[in-house]
Length: 313
Image 1 (cartoon, rainbow, N blue to C red):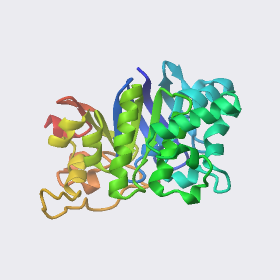
Image 2 (image 1 turned 90 degrees about the vertical axis):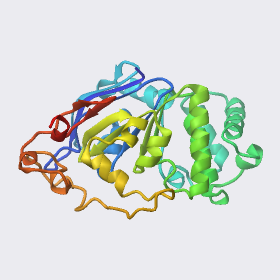
Image 3 (image 1 turned 180 degrees about the vertical axis):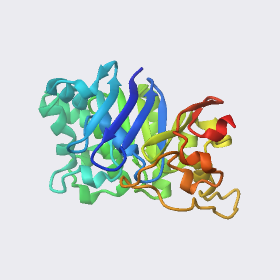
Image 4 (image 1 turned 135 degrees about the vertical axis):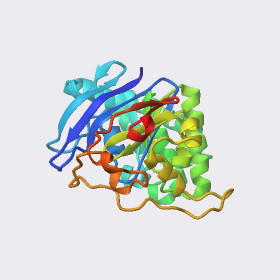
């Protein structure tokens, strides 16, 4: 297995953990989605794969990349992991780029200083990568500054940079949410093509369950730092078994079905909210008194699991 997260718990001083007993896996050539509201812990999982943890965090569990535990790696092994095995694509491409450096400098710097490639080889590789991600004039692009490119073009540059070291695993953290709908569709198609051609594993983070269902092979739904449902994307979309998953689908507008949007009541929990039972109970339309003390645990459903006591009712 390319990536295996096992019982990962991260605490950083709040009344509850940022993540609690999270387990998931990503195989070669597989796209696995992470879905949930802001603050649910999606980005923390991705950062844990690179051991970019909150300051002073207490961590338990394991994060294995190709069988090696990231949480116990030596500094040298961790540098190698970040340099050549795992790449992350962030939400806002401008935050990844130095506004006073040319695009060519951004793409070649890592290859020269980290991977030890000659400058001429690195520049040729940069041109090759820009062409691979659909930039029409790579020669012009490497001479340009970030402010000269549109958001969609910058996202392509960031994707090219992520592929520079031929990683086995991509972490896409809301990689298209800052783009307009048309550019988002083009970028998603590009990511899918590159992922399939290179048989990359991808952890795809989004707040859009419909997008995850269409784009991913499997989906994990997070709430308050725990995985509440894990199933193949098509089955989860067609028959959600956890009330939170059903709530996410119900509050997403659809052109083909212009029904009223039904938002999930209440607010997402913060790290100052502690729970004696199911963390979703206060917002769940099906909650009963027992839910206030029932400790969530994954229960078997078709194709995967759901952490809801109603599953076995």
